[in-house]
Structures are given as structure tokens and as C-alpha cells.
Length: 204
Image (cartoon, rainbow, N blue to C red; front, side, top):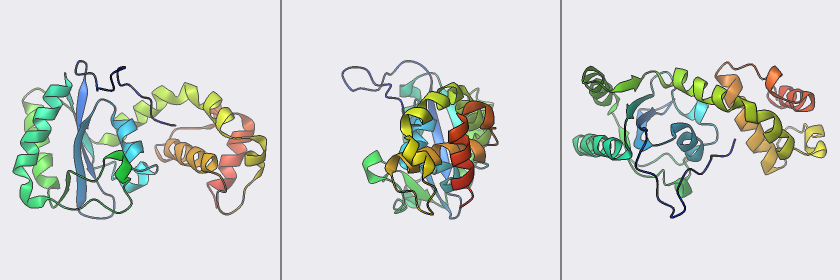
């Protein structure tokens, strides 16, 4: 589903409330994204619609903090230690999402060890990310029924061509594929027509 805008009316990110330092290793190369976000799921979606395939969810992790300021400080401290590992962003990452900085190569072990130290220091570490992500998707699942009904017209549901022909079809397929990839049963969450459509397109 499309990310929810949680900024205040001035466009600034609220500084109070929990935040997360995230480490997102790529699935098929020795490269990772370091950053912080109030909502890591929205952040991953903004970087790539098929984030559940692009990132290795069994190696990715989050460090939970009490404030944005705390998460920002952790990220800055780690960035200073990783200067020698700076790398360009993968070409598949959306530049418009601001995802072209804070990419590193060969830095995973160092960050994994930092996460262990932070856990021992009292921080809550969600490792692996897969479990946290599954819970986050389940928490949004009550919106899927109405969201897919609004996203997909009757004509789009009837179209099962090899290539998705509309943006709404591609966005809906990617969102539903994420649920399937995390082992979440879609049958009780979707209208019958949407469920049948997804069953067909996910097997093409």
C-alpha cells in the first residue's frame, strides 16, 4: 500500500516518539543501506516497491530508539566509522525517494557487531527484520480489502496479460506479493475478485 504521510503540517518529521535505525543489506550483493525512520516499512517501500525481494530480510535489522534525535545520533556515529565503505546506490533504487546516499559495501559485519553492543546496552534490536516486518504488514491488513477495491477497476481485474498494463495493477500486485512473501494468508483479507486476480498474475 502507499506510504502514510506522518509529517506535521510544516512538513517536518515529528521528533518525539519511537524511531528506528535501519540496516538493509541487499539480497544479491554485498551492499547495504543505513538510515533512520519513524516508519521503516514506508521507508523500504519508498526505496523499492519490491523491497521484500531487493533486501535480505533475514539479515536486515532495526534498532529501536525513543526519539528521532537518538536514532539520528546513532546513524551519524556509525556513518563516521564506515567512511571507507562508502558505495554508490544500486541503480534500481529510486533517487526521488532520497535513497541514493548512505550506501556501504563490506560493512555488514561491523554493523551487526554494533547492533549486538547496542542490544547489550539496552536498546531493542529487531533482528531479523522479517519478523518485525510481518507484524507491521499484519497491522495494516484490515485496510487491504477497501484499498484493493479502490485501486483496481473491473477492467483491471479482468486483465491478466503477461505484463501489467496499468500503474495501479503493478502497485497492487507488488503490495499483495509482499504479504505473500512474508507468509501472510491473503484469502481472508481480499475481495474474491481481487484474490483471483492476484492468484493469476502472481503465477505469470
